[in-house]
Image 1 (cartoon, rainbow, N blue to C red):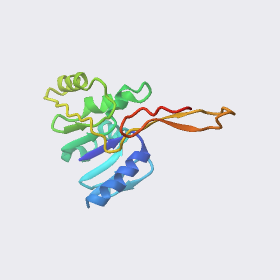
Image 2: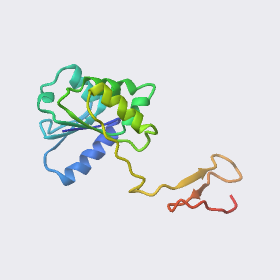
Image 3: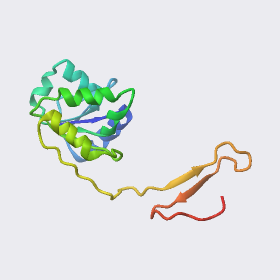
Length: 163
């Protein structure tokens, strides 16, 4: 399986996380190659795109690709990389796409399903492993001196107080 992410820092973090739970994990970025024959390879999406263009032998035994931050497909500068990967992935490869911010998930799934000629299922949850809090940063104002004010707490309650 391949796990792709948009940036090297996230790939490095996921490598460390996966390495704690699984034995056979590798990392491929522009700078680093660790255990490149592992059964689970973590890489940037650009690395996978390069492998597809170069028809890497590693792709022959590939069964699954997990694409984290799939909403990057909508990025004006780098989105084409995600699109090319989706188009070029061999038909036998299963696909799991992850995102916390795709607003049109069903339409996106239908598009991928038409392109890959297979069913795509949307699984969503409103549960957050890390509670979301909203803050206001006042910037360089001399009266507030770069203060940070919590507006909405982890229970999603608006905090009414003088700012």
